[in-house]
Length: 301
Image (cartoon, rainbow, N blue to C red):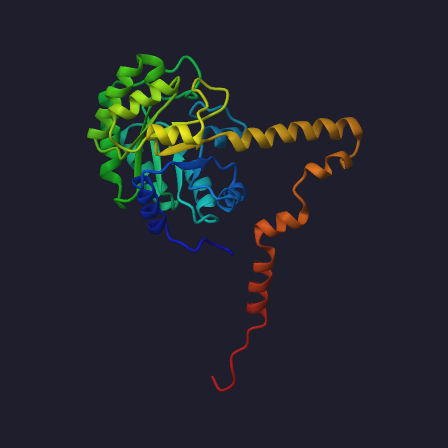
């Protein structure tokens, strides 16, 4: 009620320990703080804030139009309501190495457990669209070095994302990942790998925690959790799943409302008022308010 029961430092240590456990962490992307509460309640391992989801929520395409402060603001809203570790898509670091350094500190201050930076040219594109361009590897290495130097909490996870698979090929993407690890990246996010064999090859070549992006309608095969765990991956990411589900339901509901002139046919598909209040913790807030309102100092004080 009102806030989480854990500190950012505790959540960062828990995230590090979970990544070192050898088991696969299942991580959906939150649409908003309320969905982050549901992610925790449903038993997932962490919460993700996708740059594509935030951009879409603002009515923008995912082409680098959001700012570091917009992302940090949404991140802080999410970390306020969940005790799960949360990590964020920090795009290209919102600029040059100095900007990436500032971004790390903004995201630390927002209570996150980590972030990932990518090696696309800014303005970036969605990782599963054609027409991407990547910066020279040494430019990305400098950005990672700046991020590492700016980090104040050593448990804050710095993940490097490489988009080179679709641009330069799998071998080049692996070479970049190794260089990024040498520069200080704690984990790697290989974007847009094609199939199980490519996921396997990347795991064999890179010896840090790896993230598998299981985004829908993209270039990667949608592998199940058991397969990814057997391949040795550490995170199965579902970054836009909840947004797509929600917006599909919204579109269907609006069409029904427009056609019928009422929402009666939609009631069975809705979250009820009582369920929403339960998720929000209405009773806990009311009890807290009552305890404060009714409080009096004991006699003799």
